[in-house]
Image (tube, rainbow, N blue to C red):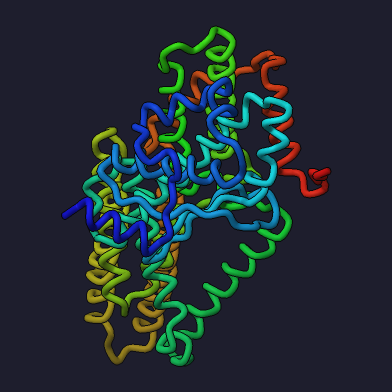
Length: 413
């Protein structure tokens, strides 16, 4: 039954793996060796069939549903893209296929590695999407689960923000609309000058990069690898890990604010689906924080509420005493009014301090955010060192020059 279902899915989605249909995942991985890659794959179409086959076998190894893979023209440096939607597809920049003859002609040893990396990265986004669509997050590893739960929350926020109910009720939603509009405007301004803005430390991206690093590291264990190729793969994997750390920590790319988006969820108090998604995310994140011995979101919020309750009780008791002393004596009442005014000022100061403390607490939680990604932490400790540039990476620079530079054109005879 499962085989028939897969065949129907393949037919409906025009999935074609060509001669790679009976290849195992291990056999497909072995083709990353450039001394096999360029002799097994003849052209652009076979390259896509290979990428599709790798995606399918990798998904099967993780007990995940696979998706169709396609070429698509992208502006800028996007090489792969997977949209969070009901029926996702993995889309590769058509430059990858268009450059294949060039890469084969110059026997570029990095190209097989990087296209394998692309398909594994996008496959991890498919896992996240599958979890959101099914409502079952149990298959995901912790880092991807955080990303998928966050994406589910943002999908619910955006759904309500873009709804007619939200936009039409101006008397109720005008301030909330302004908050979202300003946030969108700031994002668009920054995105227009920095293509990677918001990409680096967004949880789905961190997870996809980390798991891709792990999968690519398995290439070092392939049988019959020459010393040259092992050195190449080792250098490329190290560069990949460095890039992962760079994206997460560099100020140009690390603009994701986990707790700002939780604040957005708190603003949408009338929408149960947003509240539920936020609670689901916070409960899981708090579980991870607690396991690491870190302060939780729930503890910060409870401190706020208990602090507010403590202030209220204390000042209310004093206000009742003042109120009970009010009498028909102008001189006495004048003193009481001054004391009441002092009490009100004290209340304002206490509330201000309480909320300033909450801001500081949330900043601390934001600093704890990277503790949720132990793989990234390990990479930072071992990779963020000055390393001698090796000539082995020349092929990497050629690939990036062809794929990422818009002015680079491959002319066919």
